[in-house]
Image (cartoon, rainbow, N blue to C red; front, side, top):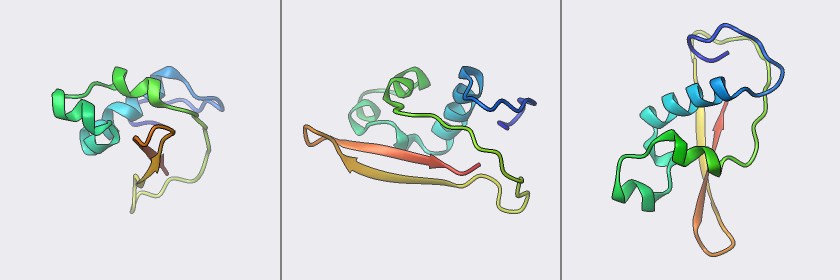
Length: 89
């Protein structure tokens, strides 16, 4: 579940996606393409079209370690770097 949202949906919802992206962007602005970050402060509406897939998974919460994010850069078709962010809760 996303912080402050108390429901358990088995499918991604726009509300939870926006909440996760907003918090992630605050903590890790590097998820936005560098060319956008150079020009202005990035908003999540610029990130949402870059999302390829969303999944929902349920697991026990871990109050000790909390949120775990990992990022990886892939090279796109035209040589652009494509950031992929994994959110493990």
